[in-house]
Image (tube, rainbow, N blue to C red; front, side, top):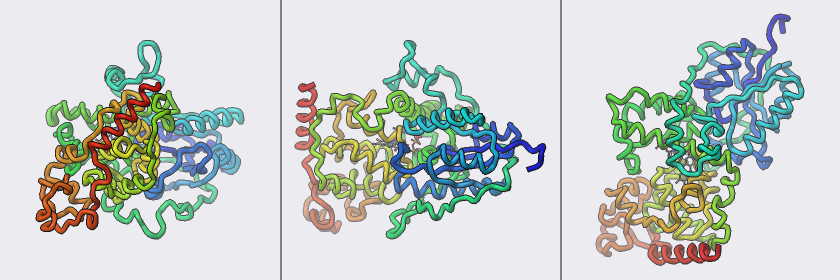
Length: 483
Ligand code: FAD
């Protein structure tokens, strides 16, 4: 390296696989140092949040996309695996880097790594700087008047609104000074993030394109085509009415500030109610993260410890029928099969299938949460845990336990023509709207005409909902009375 060339800065990518609105990248760029872009694959089981199989598929393609963007700027992404501190130390030694910049994570293992890395690097006189950007506001910034974290969503939302507009997003630097002479990168192929045989992710690419460019295109399409009417349409799974940005957000291919910014200045074209409702959903994500940051046990333990004594049935055969989408309740089965086929499920249906698992089958929410973690491309430690606890009634500001979704009525209300069910449950495709959500009540002639043989081509309901509801309420009451 020439004498007057500044020493490089390592840009450590984490849940921020983008060049747009990337504060750490921007700071590295402004510093004028050559940049070494690095992604570290952390070992499983050492505190890092487990990477589910569906999200591993996404991560593979996302890293490829990021590397491609860097190559366009005459650089490349360095891949390394191991404990972050060890990887960073080795790279600093190899490249004589004098600084490491990164964007913070807010999940408990991510926070612990941040703290350790910062302290250790500073001890070695390496400049270690971390930045925000995964959230709209730092969790320490939005606190109640008595300086405690919010536990209830509505006041949290009010505080977020009155905190003022988030920082405007930063555009990606048009030119980057990327370091040359880097050590060899590990091979992405050898990380084996993609499924082997059978390739259960074969349909993912029909729906998804990982990477920040696709994220930005999806945002633009959503704002132009679906934001108008979002409040009304977002509950109907057969409509393409939501942004489907969640997997892009989960790995940070787009920032929440960029999304927020895209909803500015639209009031002449889009009703304010739709804009506000969409922002409120982004704020639910924010709320989940603030909760997880302040109460790390949310990820694995009942927030409300009264539920610790709840007598779950935890029947393995029932769990298997739920996972495979073979419960005999069409809206539940459609949701579980959408999840398997596309690695994603509509929010309304997530609530229905979660309620069914927890309340109709009385299976511990943590088993459902773990299945979602493994099969969702948008698996997110904050949103997943907070949402499961919300449905279970054990979470912060949760839906009360006694609110038990009736899967037939939910199906009829939110999928009135049955189109959603028909697209994921082909056995019922020929059944008309009247019985599509209750095939078990259809006359034999109707079933015959639709080619449905209950118990053979499609299952009979695995539980009677009315009976299951009473059973769940009795168990809940016993827990409540014992507390
Ligand atoms: P949009 O309606 O377009 O909303 C925009 C963004 O707002 C979403 O991408 C998401 O980041 C956020 N958002 C929307 N709804 C919610 C919500 N209810 N809670 C928190 N944030 C929300 N979301 C995940 O990102 N990862 C998960 O692992 C996850 N697990 C869930 C598990 C259960 C049992 C339930 C009921 C919900 C879960 N959600 C999860 C929340 C929600 O279902 C998804 O965020 C949403 O369906 C994503 O679709 P979208 O991007 O089209 O949403």
